[in-house]
Length: 443
Image (tube, rainbow, N blue to C red; front, side, top):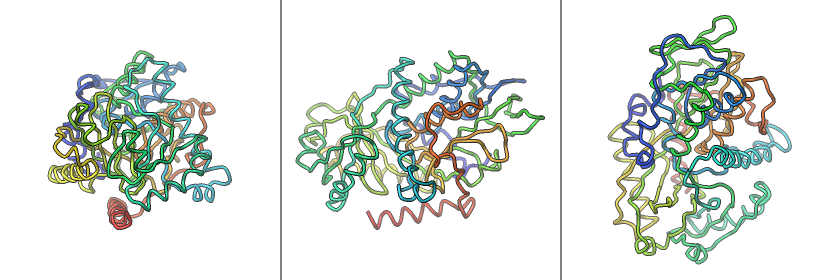
């Protein structure tokens, strides 16, 4: 299997110091390897939020489902993200969505973002999954005075797009709200919430297994072939035959398994640190006592929130090369930015550090639909760093499409349009290098 970032990115090292693993360790997510001959109505490749949502909903609809993962369910981004269940999933501006897909296309995307959050909230409630939910929406923070002015101009459009009443804050108001930092203002969108990503993940896996899904770890898909109308997928120890196939590997998609997928994903590293729990005195010294999710209004943004036990989780976009040396450099860079934004916490240890892959597309929108030239095979990918809600949502849509049913949720026209391949093939990370360079200059 060939991945754009090579062997180190696919090793356990980038995820070795994951905070979320304190509560949900690797062995709690382990699943037996697939062995011998297996038959199912639907085979799902990939055990993250998309794959588990698809598998769960298929099984609840009466289908026999087999799910395989190269490591264990949630080994990729679903088990190592920052814990934001929030609006997002696309980077395409509204005017671009309207031009490409017609009038109302932009609002379809915003409505899907809202529905995705509602889906996770309703699902975790229905299944009784304790996810450590906190934060009333998210606050967008201005890293400069110009950015603060821009946030004020965004308010009317955001109110309309998300059918919500946003609030604009100056620095004094942020301090009153317990969000004192070096930022110059903010805007709160009362949509979304923070959660413990692995608690959500493990709850999904338990629910899927209880519904009858056969979950298998340490079972990478080595080959996908056809036997008449059936799919035949080979793993190291098994041969799995299924009527329908779902590929849900997102930023960990290999370049050589499904020919159509080659070059249509652009994985990008995101890196996170987390502090030890802070007491009231330490929190008050900085003036950040809120458990509100926050992120910055700029291209190379930082995102952060206090967990219920008062650890600050703080992330940012990572590097272009995955290696031990580069991870060391990125960890130091993240810590430097943390100290700059929260100077009163410069002495607070950050013993946790991990990184993983988000997934971008050339269309700047997710794709959720049938794999062209492969009747009966479906995929969803490209959540642009917002996969907790959108990946879960697209998984339920795939479950319906795989059964030939109208999707139970809105599928925006933008999500049904296959994204083009990135130019430059295996060298397409060059686009990230150019974007990062421009972002550093413009930000």
